[in-house]
Every structure is written in C-alpha cells, then in structure tokens.
Amino acid sequence: MEKNLKDILAKAEHEIDSALNLDDLEKVRVTYLGKKGKITDLKKNISNLPNEEKPMAGKLINETSKKIEKSLSKKIDAVNKEILDAKIKKEKIDVTAHFDKNESGHLALINQTLEELESIFQNMGFDVVEGPEIDTVKNVFDDLNSPADHPARSTSDTFYITDDILLRPHTSSMQIRVMNKGKLPIKMVSAGRVFRNDEVDATHSPMFHQLECLVVDEGVSMANLKATLETFIKEMFGDDIKLRYRPHHFPFTEPSLEVDATCPVCRGEGCPACGNTGWSMELLGGGMVHPKVLEACGIDSEKYTGFAFGLGVDRIAMVKYGLDDIRLLYDNDKRFLEQF
Ligand code: FA5
Image (cartoon, rainbow, N blue to C red):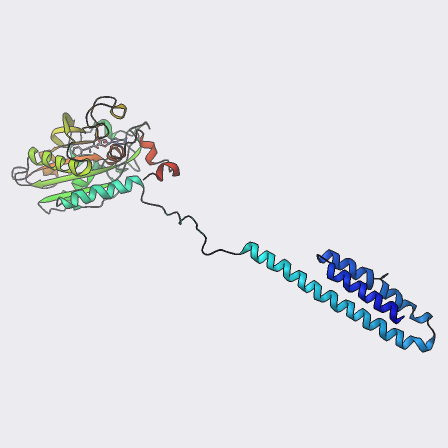
C-alpha cells in the first residue's frame, strides 16, 4: 500500500508539474481526487482491508490526498498568476507612447471674420455696439425713410413675428438705435445676424451677417466714407486691392452706392473665382445718411451730416478665404473647417 501510494503521488506530481493550463490541472484532479479517482478508490477500499491495517492505510491515503491537493492548489495559483500577468501586460498603458494631440475646435470662420472686422474698425477709433436680432418695423423701415410700398417690407422678403416686430433684414436698424440715444458725434460699427426670405444659392443665404458702420458729425462728407472704406479694405486684404463704386439707391442714404473690390484671388487679372471680371462680388451698400433719417432721430440735419454702410460679412469671408459657395460657412463639414 505504501509503495503504491508513493507511486501514485510521484505520478500525480509529475502530471501537475507538466500541466500547461487550468484544464490540464482539472484533469489531474479528476484522475486522482474525483468521484472515480485513484485516491477516492483507495479510500473506498479501506473497508475491505484487515482491521489492523485500516488505521495506517487511512492515514497514508489522507496524507497522499492532502499532498496532491496542496500541489494542485499551488500550481493553480501559479497558472492564475501567469494568466493575470499576461492580461496586465496586454492592457498596460504605455505613458511614454506617442499619441496624436487632443483635437481642439476653433472659432467658426464667420466668427473669425467678425472678430477681425471689429478689431480693424476698433483700431480706426470706432465703437463696437451690440444690438438685437429682433427689432421693430419703426427701427428697421419707418425711421430709415423706407416708403410704405418698399418691396423689402413685404412678408415675402422679411420674416415678421407680429405686424410691428420682425427678424431684422439688415443691421441698418442699429443706425436708428444709436442715433436715438442722442449722443453726438457718432462713430460706431455693429455686426450680427440678419434674416431675409432669400433663395439659397452660392452667394445668398436666408441668414447671413452684416456689419453696419455709421459716422455722424459736423462736416462729414463722401470723402470720409471713401477714406474709411479704403483704409478698411487695405487692412483686410492688402495694399493692392482697389474698390469699385457703383451708383445705387437706398431710401436711407443719398447719394447711395454699392461697392465691389479687386478680386483678391487674381488681384484683378481675371480668374475663375471672379468669373474673369477681375472684381469681387458686391460686398456692401452705403452712402450719405439721408437728412430725413437724421431728423427722424432728432438730429439737426443742417448742422450734422453722416455716412453709413452695411457690409456683407459672409461675402468678406468668402473673398478672404477664396470660397466659391456661401453654404460652406454653414455646412459644418469637418474636412472644410479643419483647413482654417
Ligand atoms: C443693405 O442691407 C443696406 N442696409 C446696406 C446699407 C447700409 C446701405 C447703410 C446704406 C447705408 P443690401 O441689401 O445690398 O443693403 O445688403 C448689403 C450687403 O449684404 C450686400 O452687399 C451683400 O454683401 C450682403 N448680402 C445681401 N443679401 C445677402 C444674402 N442673402 N446672403 C449673403 N449676403 C447678402
């Protein structure tokens, strides 16, 4: 019996040593300690032994069983540790490894342009004034000398909230708000969103941005308007950019004009961006403030004169960044946005 148990123990320990994984070890356990295992069989046979051999046989079988259990449990711990180590190694975070730096966003192109415009005008001594996107018919049309039958007043052009309240279709209502404060002289710009029932195309959007400029003082002339525009355009696009003035009509300025600039892509040579004209699309409308507008705001038009213009900010951004479609500014296409 003793010799048999020693052989069993030696064989079990060899199998435990050679086991590669938990499955192998389970097989060893079943072979020796399982319900039909070799040690279990021996335990069952004790009752068949002569009485005087039973105590010694029982003691030896238990000792062998305990040794196999101990070796098994030691090896199971070792295999489990190996598994854990391998897992940890695989999941280890290498803090020295190279990784792409965090992606961070930036101001939308239109906001970059608004900031640049405001900063240029601030450097020229203009106040930057904020105003509401929802305004009154009085500020948007009446006090700006717009005739009752002006097409811009119609509901097919302008978004009304009530008969008297609307989404401003231009920033010129800010002229009225500032002049009504009664503080002279005035030298201000005011930028923001405006809304029109315009069909969307490459150069038109129903929501776009304007920057309004207003100067009112004694002796303000068309020469001041031209000088301001030319200084601004050089700051924005460079020295070799010229402006083209075309006569126009606005109810709130007299005389009135529209302004284009040398195409900044080809610098006037003619290219696909400007349709080979050498000129940008229309950038702004302006003129000398109509005396009736000054009077509507309680300003003596005999003593004071003024100039005003309204700049299409989206179009300035298009020209500056060489964009051929205004929708690029609003599509939120990451491939486009990442370029700026
Ligand atoms: C006006 O809005 C006048 N209030 C401008 C003005 C101000 C004149 C002060 C005199 C004195 P106009 O509708 O032309 O004018 O618009 C001005 C500029 O806004 C245009 O030159 C153009 O650059 C831009 N613009 C007009 N409509 C759109 C549109 N749907 N989408 C994008 N930009 C537009």
